[in-house]
Each structure stands twice: as C-alpha cells, then as structure tokens.
Image 1 (cartoon, each protein chain N blue to C red):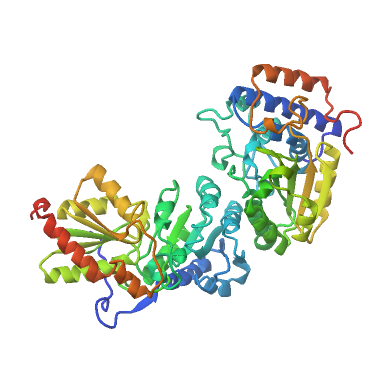
Image 2: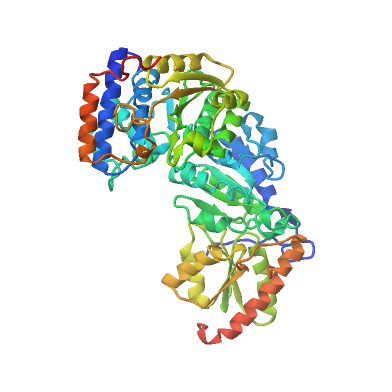
Length: 288
Length: 332
C-alpha cells in the first residue's frame, strides 16, 4: 500500500480491525478471539504499510504475497482486507455462515486476495517457501516478498521444521516469517504444553536471520520487516511478542479465549473498552 | 468402441517388460521440454522415482526437499500458486502415505495443479515388506474432491499419462510400480484422462482392471478362452474420474464383473466399480486385490502368486465365479 499512513493512523487502523474482529466473532457465534486481537497491530502494519498489493487487482503480478499459516486467526486477515478495500466491511458479518466467502478457515478459491488455504497447522511456511523459491530461483523476481504469519503453538508441528530447514538450505531471502509469540495454545501455555524455547536459537541454528520485537509496536513491526527485506542471504523470521486478546482487558493473557467468541454482552463490553483506548494500542509504559 | 492396439509380443515368451516408473521418468522430461512451467520435487528418492532424467535435463527446475514429505507437498502447493506445475515424487508409502493431510488441504481444497507421484506402489515392491508396499493410496486419493487419480497399466502408458496430467490443470495423483511390468500397449494405443478402454471383447464376464493388473487380466482372458469362457477385458487407467459409460456398457453386455487391482479392495478400485454398479446396474461382482491385510516380504513374483494376483490365479477365480453365477448371465 506504500506507507502513506502515519503511525497514529496505523494504530487507529489496528483499533478498527479489533472492532471488526469483535463484531465478526459476535455475529458468527463461534471462532477464535485471542489470536486475531493479538495480531491486529501486525496486520495493520502489513496491510497498510509493509506489503505492496492492489485490492482491486488481487492477482497483480508484482504484488507481495501473504500466506496465513495459522488459519484459525483468519478474522484478523478478513478485517484487514476489508479495511484495505478488498471487499465491503458489511461482508465481515457473514463470517462462518453458510454460503459466505469468509469461511471459518481461509479457502483461497472463495475469496480473491487470499493466497492459500490453511487451517490444519504447520504447513503455511512450506507454502510460502514454495512461492519464495519460485521468485528467487525460477522467476528471477527480486523485488517481490513473501510474508507468512504463523502461531507459536503451531511450531509444535514437525512440518514447520521441515520447512525451516528447506528455507535455510535454499537461503530464501525473499521469505519473511512472522511468529505470533503470544505464549498460549488451546490447552494452556506453550511452555507447559510443549516448550518452544530457545526459540531464537532454534531458528538461528536452522539458518535464519532472527528479529525479535514487541508485536504491538507498529513502528517496530515496520522496522523489522524493512530489516528483513535488507537481509539478502538468508530467510528472516520476526518473533513478534504479543499479548493474546490484546485490546480487550478481560481477554488479555487468558488462554481460555483462544478458541471462543464473545457473546453480545461481552462484545459490547469489549467494544466499549477498545474505545477508551482513544486510538492508542499500547497503554502508557508498555511496548519498546 | 475405441480402437486399442495391443503390443504384438504381449503374450509371447519374449514379452517386453519395463518398470512403469520408467515411463514416468521419460514422460516428465518430454513434458518439461514443451512447458517450462513444469518443475520437479523429490524427497531423496530421485533415481528410484526416475525423476533423475528430468533433473539431468533441467537441473534448474529440480528441487531436492530431503526426506520431508509433508514439506514436499506443501512447498509444491506454494510453487503452484506462483504459476508453476509441480511434480512431487517419493514412494507412495510416504507420498501420499505420510503427507495426506497436506495434500488434502494445500493441494486439493486449495485446488492447485500439483502432481503427486507415488512410486513403488503395490505388493510387487517385494522384499521391502509391508511398510513399503503402498496398498491404500487408491482409497485415500480417490476420496479427495478435485483430485484426479491415475494408475497406468504399463510404462508406455505411464509416459502418456504423465504428459497428460502435466497439462490438465488439476490436482492429480499418478500411481507407479517399481518392478518390471509386461508392456501390453504400443505408442499408438490411446490414452486420455477419464477414458477406459476395452482391450478384448467378450460376452460372459467383464474383467475390469487398473494399473499392473490389466496385463494379468489379459492373460486370464486367454486362459478362460481355452475353457470356452469369453471374457471382456476393460482397462481403466483413470480411477477418478471413472469412465462410467464404458464400464456400464461392458457390464450390461456380460452380466458379470470381476475387478482387479494391486491395492486394498476396500475403498480402492474395486470399491469404485462396486459403488457405480450398485447404484446404476446391480450386477454380480467379484473383487480381486488385497483383502483387508498387509503385504509381506518376498520376491515380486512370489507375492503376486501368493496373493492371487497372477493371470492364472485370476482365471481360476473368474471361472469359478462364472460357474456360480450362471443364472445371472445375460444371453446373447
């Protein structure tokens, strides 16, 4: 989109995306709350600053490509796409309903602008790596980038590490992965269920350039993506530390909101709470 | 009926034999010469799957993934999104055996024209034993919406099938065998995706086969002829989409059906034919293949004999079946 928004405007976009998410989930009556809310700042940065695309021509051949690996967080991508003009915001309320283009997990063929189909965890990085391999080795297309967002819980999947080895071997420098490091998965904390640390060390040992940021600081997200694009001899991974449910105080940090949608009372409370943030995402003293 | 010339030496002692996978290797190279979007991926079995021929011709379009079949399938999906036509190969036991979910989600639901190449399918893999004898692939692949499933009957047909799926624009699975298989077709024999072929006309029973079993059915038909049983042989290289018309036309004529496959009958090719007939033309049916059990170690020929998958053994079953179902025969 080309960076025409200020940081304050990007923060407001993130706030709008959060509102969209809460409204969508309430209307759907099911779905995942914590992950999408926690990713709102990252998606604001991706769709309103970092990535090049044309919402009126989703197949534009010079676009950057975005793959969502943890498909259950799709409400945040739908919201960002609607805010970016891929489709009307009204359609967001069809999420998870019969006949909707907005399936509970993303299906590429249903909605122009989606690059992949995902849901079962652990395969998005492979798909992104396949695309990045094509750009780097088959198409001689050096100016396009492939972004993929993964959850941290899905790093339990072996497929992720097969892809990490693959991208490391082929030094897929146009591949930029973002890990939503929110420390929760369905059954509890990631470090209780299946410890991921030393996460930085793992990716470095697989041949990746690792960046570690506050995933709610939009400026940091933009800077990290910029740095990742400048690394030309390795793939890059941005470990984005986030708070699950970010922006809604009664959802924050609570893994029980991973796979639950707010009811109308909770949604009302959440929207009120969001508005009290006054366009700011970080409370005073938070962030980097 | 479509004219289908058979190889003149198909039934002699000097019948030519070649692994079906060899035809794939040649076909992929030929396809690659005419379409530069074709790329090939392999999970550390490049020569075994015969992908080395393509690799030698087009080193820049070959991608080694290591022993990582889940990544193999999903990387292929990403390449397809980037406009490529990826052929992803390994042993069928692992591809689609290991990575079925990645194939379902990132290739089939995602509807990308990835070509899954499963080599070393069936019991004729031989001494490697049950873990490496893929018998369930027909069942697990034909159940996937959007997926085309092909089991060529010999290496000559495998070459044509490979070139055909390269250009069909759809998720596709091609099933290959390791061991040398008799060549019954010739260059001029037709191959079209979704088309079944009557190789021999008959009136008493339809012998309907796929993959390596078609040749055994031709042998069985010769034996049955000596006993006065006129068997029709139908070759079905495309298991999905199934050529319902050709099968129904044959069965309407003969009134009896025997299917044969080097795979689990449950869910496999025999099941596909049973589903068709039970809905549209209920007919006495005998299914030959693996009957709810795994294979084991042995030489390929020992195993085919042991599991009743040779022409002679199939002829015995067919004769018994014809005898037991005489009341159903439609007289002509």
